[in-house]
Length: 293
Length: 293
Image 1 (cartoon, rainbow over the protein chains, first blue to last red):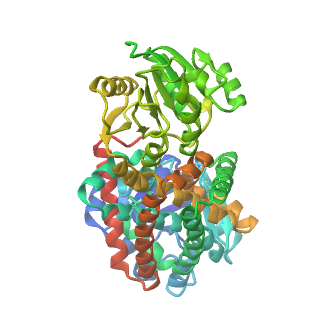
Image 2: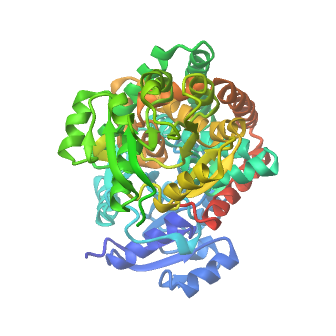
Image 3: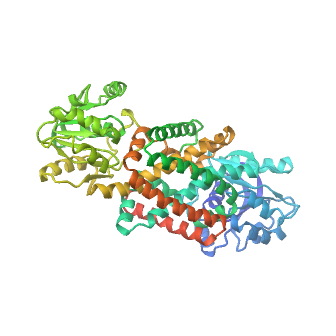
């Protein structure tokens, strides 16, 4: 319960942003939390939820005089917001973002943000299928990884951000942007793309089958609908901004799927059983490191 | 708490079979429950779990004199077990199975089972990623659909089986076999195939990426590993025995995925956002009918 930054600005009050505001408040990590969302309705809902000490009408109004600025917005919106806040950023302020793609954010923001600030791109590996300021909760980051991208910053700047994230319960890791984008393409972006696809495929059936798909969803499909209920704009931006890594992973996936498709067509029982036995083991490894729900 | 069948034989003591034994016992639905599993180790574990009133060493030993025989085994094993039990089946006995493919089971068993029995193929839409006699629980079928395939049977035969399934908490529906196999191909078989594929794709990476895929699995991949941890032999048999419907669904899925792949490559933001918004709605429809966890 130590104040780490005198003033924190959280821009974007969706699941991640509103969870951070709640955690900052609950753990007493900021002298003052100023918040902003570009959507007036979201700002009104944030007010009724008492999110933040002050709600600013503009992004620059929130960022002004802040010691830490968090951009918790879709990656496609980063450049516009950075352009707006750049002129008011305090000397020595730390800027971070919570986007799911890191190379694109670095590419977009580095030329915009002033040299007298420290930009530390980051990414919390945490989430649910819900969106909006009502969906956040202070324990969202507990025991979840939060990746900070390696960069050339004074040690105390990196240490303060790390302390803040750890105080919210996160497990902090550092990584190169390219490597982050590749790993997330397989752990997150491709699974979301596949889930969106299969739920979409079900949508194109005639009405009776569609109704029965919903009724009998407990047999596997339901897990995909949870993933495919994630925020559409956030995910549109992810695919547009990590397209190289996603298309590479998709290429591998398509090859592997074609192999299984052929095994089914030609009744190659051994190939199927062999793969299905190997994939089982990976679940136990997730359990072993404590990352099951 | 009314006895519906004097003697029930449950053959196969995996998740489904052992859950049925527990439910039959807890709800007092059978005068006697005789069980069998082809695997001696599973029989020994079932004995230490007190599963069933009697454990038979052979399938025919369990089926003899039974009023209801439940085949809770992989669909690829149905014909061999039916051949074994056919000579001992009592006149008027009801035989059902719990396989995930119905046309193949009807094709395989109809010529084998004697005319003096009633064969009512069925399928409980319930499960977890766990297997074996320890994994079962009596409430597995509560509020879950259990499909009985339409057939030409005396009304009281169908009514007794329906009563039994309802007494275990299931929502009973009837359906044609072909339609069942088509709906399950999209709700269950295709999702499992996709999950097995993507977890397999992750397995082929070098060790460091593989470790990080496991560490950062909370971002979406983890849901797929749960599905891909399902019983390998059961699922091998499903794909081999519902190959036509699975390959048809896979064809549609591949077309839809190629459409999204192209949208990502050419940065067609609208196409992505449009689909991602539509898929979100299907989740609420599952919630509305009470089939979310």
